[in-house]
Length: 113
Image (spheres, rainbow, N blue to C red):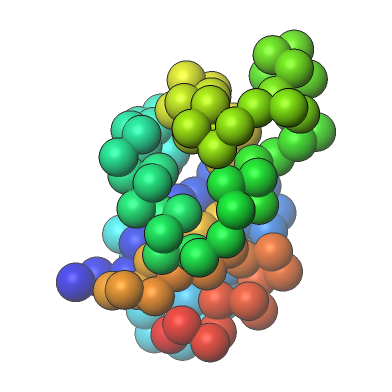
């Protein structure tokens, strides 16, 4: 399985993570999650692989988070919100087989390579 990168090319951390992977000779499958959003099942798989609460996958400073009063949302509601508003997905996320990490900072992904 190829390494996958949930990527936003406008994000400096996402670009830095991509550069880190390329510098290590890797050619990740780039998933442009803003234009091709993951469905709820995929988001649940990512959450399981990350082994974290869903809130750690959420960009809480984005407008849809505030506009939809998600600060009291359940994990299921947060998954649904990310699926509806993919800008809420924390980025970048690198998937290497069964190992997954959020690249904030980009060096966080080194342990899963």
